[in-house]
Length: 63
Image (tube, rainbow, N blue to C red; front, side):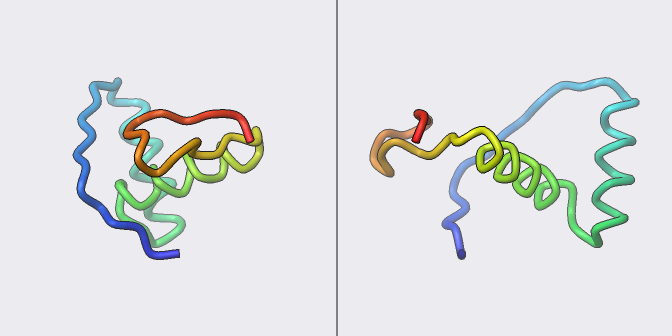
């Protein structure tokens, strides 16, 4: 499913986490941003989390 990418996310993390993200992304032949999206979507599916309302910016609820 194609998603409109119009938001920016900046995080601070340790070099260990950054290296793990880079390694995971390389293994999947993805960018770091794509890997983060994949991980968040997998987590949401696994835990039954769905976006409550597409107009409710930044809010998620249980499905």
